[in-house]
Image (cartoon, rainbow, N blue to C red; front, side):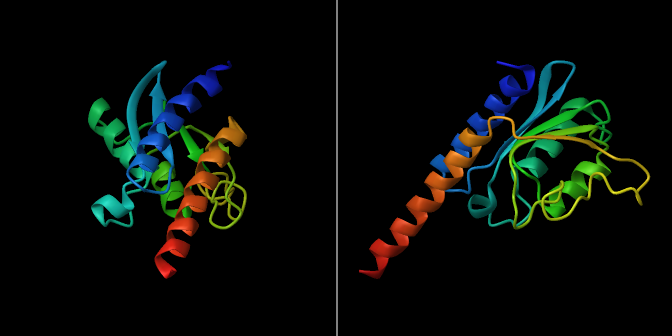
Length: 157
């Protein structure tokens, strides 16, 4: 297992926590010097907060852990490509590297739909690596949405 796969497996564990809470199963960890300094999973439904994405929660946890909002030595591992809101927070927190599992052709902001993190118009760019444990990250999302559709069908009966 590569280093990226090891840390993505930790992010996947966070996604599993979201799945247990019936949240969209996305998980994230932030790593600095080989240690996790922040972790999070989607809590939008639990908190009734549209900003409670895995990345946002992990960024807040990392900033609190390090005592600084500047996370310029950090790598964020997240199971699904960040949305525009999260990409903005990643950029503003100065995270230097984002590694994600599965691309998001609908709302991805790291190259799929938009490319916020590598926009040459901005003062800096964030390194992006993708496709790490992709099938595993895709699988948990497919499981969640399959269960959601089944639940909706059952409630229509």
